[in-house]
Image (tube, rainbow, N blue to C red):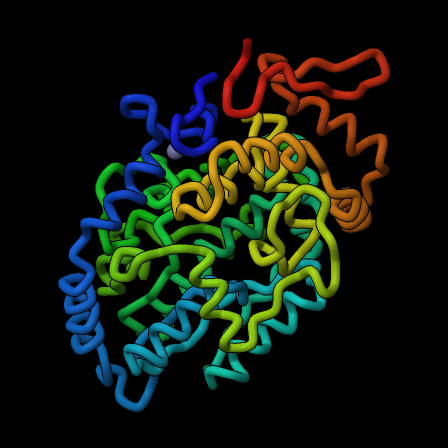
Length: 372
Ligand SMILES: [Zn+2]
């Protein structure tokens, strides 16, 4: 186990590479400083000109949104800065925080946009949340897969040619790709959604028909449709805290007025559902880092906190599994709390953790240092 010398990301994060002790997320962040943003803005403007009005009086483009701070920033940029007329495409949450629901409504209200929301099949979700927690340790696989598939399919159906996504997760936070590109055509190939399929049908609780909505169109289908999916993060510098500040100016609210989460160091990321946060926490037993590591690392890169300050925060927060997460997850899937822990125990990696005789897990590593 090795930590980046600059931020606090460990090399246990799947796909994260290191060069001379520095992780690719830090290296790619530094590249932003020498990127010719004027040139990229011009590229973005000509892309918009290419598609503006091609749909008659219809939409110039679509934006895949969740309703969070980054969605506010995207809609602000496309509608207010680029003066496009976007259609917003979104997948509804199974369980919402009040703040998340209001933020979602706020986008349409303050920017004046039409929204098409897909409401997931709750019966399928109930079965699949549990199954995905047990089998792959990614409880929200179903909604994650929908979030990727739905906007692409819908844009194709409506004949919209330009589709905006926020950031290229694999590039901005370090992953599979070393070079940055505007095109999001390979979005279906990245690791955000694990490529599992047959496993879901083994016990005959679900059929392939139940999951038709998450089936990705093939690359050939996308080519044929002439849909151009792009990442906004290629064209404008991407900084989650900056996006938060912009979003606030357009009515976005953070979660702390409603709920205090136990395992996070901010209240503006992924705040629209509490139950879904189990997915984010699962990185902790599997890879020995979670939300505080990721957000704290972004703060170090942006220069707002030192590595020492962030190490302290990570030590305090990453290990905390919010009790509200367990409650919401168990309520929805019909699982008991002891059943929940029995499954969760399976995901603790013995390389990084040891369990005491009463079942409590203890870290074998030191944050920022590794296993000594
Ligand atoms: Zn780093």
